[in-house]
Length: 441
Image (spheres, helix red, strand yellow):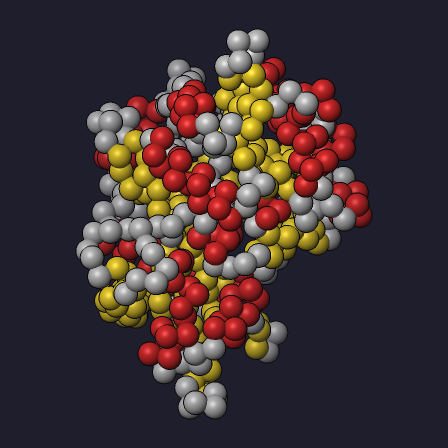
């Protein structure tokens, strides 16, 4: 199958550790993989901790490549911000294409998952810089986020990978997208597969946007070639306009509990209750949730945990309110339907994402309305993002005419292990929900 390529895996000197520190020394292991891309030229394929991306000058210089940090980051921005189509040109379904510009890479995304690594496919070019090092073009980019989930049968914590920001350069020669035409996606997939073997990861999952025949064929082919199991799950994304959705009454009653460890601990516990049968959950322990929250608010100090208190002062409803606009700008391109109205209002640069909501559905709806008011008034955040999947107890209150359906998929190495996990999550109606919440990137 395909050709032999080598990727350079940069990781801590201490073996077995999956968290990283920005300034620590790294070892580099050269690992051979069998790739099925049709690209005829050399590639430098690197796996680098996301928290070490600020040190790419030394990594690239050591490989004889253009070592400018500024040049590297510019290449990343160009590839990451390619338009993401949630409009299927084959079927005519879908309403929008959007472009995301992440701010302050890599620190913004590293603040969410310190265990993440980045897969980079660099195409060395013939021309050199002033130091005699070869220039390059970034052909592919992807994140491998590492999260633990709780195996329902054994109660053990197991590692999983969440693949995100999978991007292949749109660079074209002769009117053809050079790297897309040659199957760079398959090479990145080969790296994913090898990383899962090295680190003992059985389950990986990802979002591939709106389901379409081309992507479906690709995933089925890759899962067969790599002997992987494959499943997919529908998810709906809704957008609410805060000016129409907000409530001053409920906003006045909300309490910021971010610094109250007892209340945050209670919030996390209750957010899991009733959703423990979800297939995967990024933060099954309080320590993992608290670590994530401290990382997020150290980067985005407007991201907080709010509760709607009951008459006894205890939590009636609560949610982690992520000020998603601190992480990226969103631009809608060629929007259709009511998304054209949203684009004309020029308000997509500030987005609120309330996650891990807990409480009775009616109380949670009040909480969200209050958050919409607070964030628009205090932080000029004009939109609220809501994610829902089958079985979501809050689905009715998330719905909006601004709807974007898309698909998550899982890939797994051990079919027996995955089937056992899935059977422990299956509801009485036969449905399996993949998440308690749509995962943080």
